[in-house]
Amino acid sequence: MLFDTIAAISTPRGEGGIGIIRISGDKSFEILERIFNTKNPNRDLGFYKFNYGFIHDNGKIVDEVMAVRMKAPKTYTCEDVVEINCHGGHLISEKVLELVLKNGARHAEQGEFTKRAFMNGRIDLSQAEAVMDIIHGKTEKSISLSLEQLRGDLRDKIASFKKALLDVTAHVNVVLDYPEEGIDDPLPSNLRENLENVYAEADRLISSYDKGKKIKEGIKTVIAGKPNVGKSTLLNSLLKEERAIVTHIPGTTRDVIEEIINIKGIPLVLTDTAGIRKTEDIVENIGVEKSKKFIENADLVLLVLDASRELESEDREVIEEIQNHNKKTIVLLNKIDLERKIELEEFNLENILEISAKDNIGIEDMEERIYSYIVEENVEDSSEKLIITNIRHKTALEKTKDAIRNIFETIDAGMPMDLISVDLKEALDSLSEITGEISSEDILDHVFGNFCVGK
Ligand code: GDP
Image 1 (tube, rainbow, N blue to C red):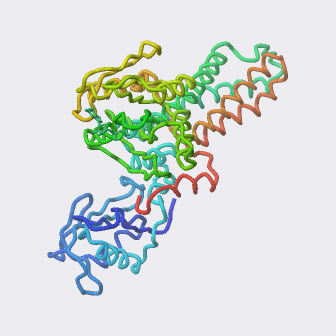
Image 2: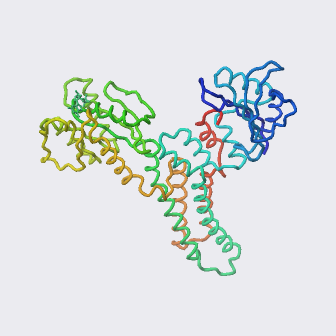
Image 3: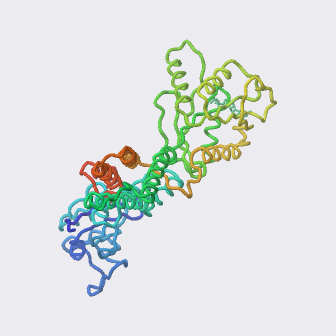
């Protein structure tokens, strides 16, 4: 397939050591020739090797660079590719890009390099999506899931589903084409078994989506407790411990802060509520309602209690709120550096840990506990089993599952075989949407529109 030649700055905007201009298309080498000089004009630039030299605009030097040529089809896009490593200032990268554009390239759109890799058949759509997930990956765990997808694990799984469906299609066609043969078994048992396996596997993948989403987007965790028990101190100590803070989301109200931290490769979206308490204050009331809402929507609650004081009604209120919602909770008895006064017998609390947020005691144990909770509940066996993280894949698999269910119903009701052809096609088409063999402009725009320019 032949497209025009595109170019973009592939490194982030801003100042840095180097800025990389990427060019892809059949004019790439020609463009480089026009704007790049090596010291020795007779030097063969070769392929996949760096060449030291200068970018010039009609003889006037623009920058000192390293340039590399890569020959189709062994490149990211499957087309001829040139990469120019210039100095990392934004202005200089822009200048080199401008020159490349002036000499015959078009500015690439978002994700257009990856789109070409897809259009030219080097990767399927699920792999292109994995590239984007890797770029946006927040922790090692989410990136390792994306890498599996990039490696083609999902693509291979979908291919195996399609094979089972195509085998059934072939059988149905024989039955329809040669009715006189009197094939009375509508679906031989091995074909039926394969189809049942596809159904079960699709079902498992669909239900893995929630886990995948949590790994990708984070476990919604709320630090709850009445005022002054040490919630902010705990949050700070977690943030200090975990160097890999990925984002800071400014609170939407004056009393809610959200931070993403990384517990052994799994992102935790932490909400620090300003405390749940009854108050006449209208603004505070909004805060209270919000806090309760956070508990309601949380995947995990870190309940902080002050061990140096007896339980108070405000503590009871928070505990009741958590128990009403039956939330997975880790109870943190804070301030154990002080004399212990708290008694918890009246509540049936499990999962209790003693900590001192101020002196950093018990924080590591707490992280262990959080991690094992997350792993037990959410990512069991994830190293062996494929997990999907993309809503588009989930929707397509649901359509596949529905179509297969229809097929079984049609067969079991003894209906004519041509009726299942429609559902077979529907199931196959839905699977093809995942890999992109069938794709509308809308889907492609959606997938590649989320990319950065230059990827
Ligand atoms: P929040 O209102 O729940 O966010 O509580 P803060 O984090 O602001 O803490 C309230 C007070 O308790 C502060 O003076 C903290 O220094 C203190 N504090 C927090 N954690 C500990 C702890 O583990 N031991 C002791 N002795 N004091 C603590």
